[in-house]
Image (cartoon, rainbow, N blue to C red; front, side):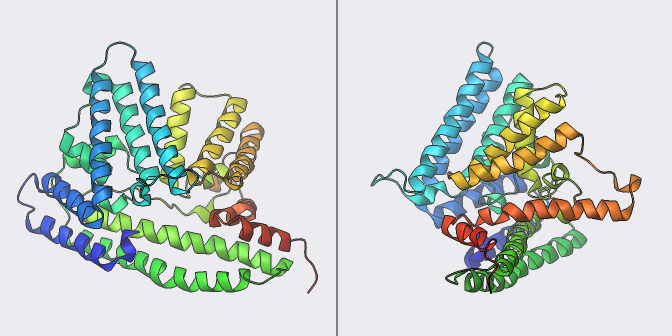
Length: 384
């Protein structure tokens, strides 16, 4: 969201310059970044600023308390996670106008579905590490409020972010050139390609009735559109994050060259899939699961990812669809394909099959039930 606002982009460019000019100060990355994160939110929205001060402070207290707790640790851990999930779900329902209240402002839900995942990751760290799970209030606030990844990820791991805070600011000229190019590429995707592709999508999908060739085209076109949209955002976030001295993880790892759905979800929006797999599997089954257990957990993970995207039956069905396919891969033992051990023809045929499965449901990401219904209806309309 920030990256379509020129003032926000200039503010981040200014922060990078300040960090570069103060690189001799060992604490520049930590103290200046906190000041930047807070000032940015305050200028953007006073309500958002106040909400996140309170939300982050409460969760920091919970993080510290959980790490020091001797008794009822697991119960407290579960209750803290449940409290965050319930709070976020409730606020999202207000944002979706399922609930209404005159005091509610939709701005406070900005970035919340990403930031609650970071909060929960920190709670996991405190629970499993215990007394050694230390983080200063300064570093915890920077972790939750990190502006480059605030609204749409990539999702930062608590352990990795804390490790980066201990490293001095070391971005050199070659890295600056590389990351600036990454930002420009992301801007081109977001501002140019996505805008043009969205116009085409709206023009064709706006027809009163669609035919099979139009529906197929729209499904493929929309798949490409959301790839450029989200990978473009990730490019910009990774570029700015690394220019600020933090190793932001990659979100897209050649997803179109994934021969199975299991491998695809490790390469498409990789940080989200990794988060759900790590936290669900870690909580439910810390041992290597059986094929049937893995299949059941895959269903659970995909339904949760669907609900994370939106509270609607469309996203639930999307989660069930992908959960069934992933479950079958686990049960039948088709979760991975080693490119070096199979022929190129077989490998790319499997990649194509995976993309067909993904394309069949990708239109759900539009979030518009009317558009989804119209496009699927067009698949059975063979008349010209």
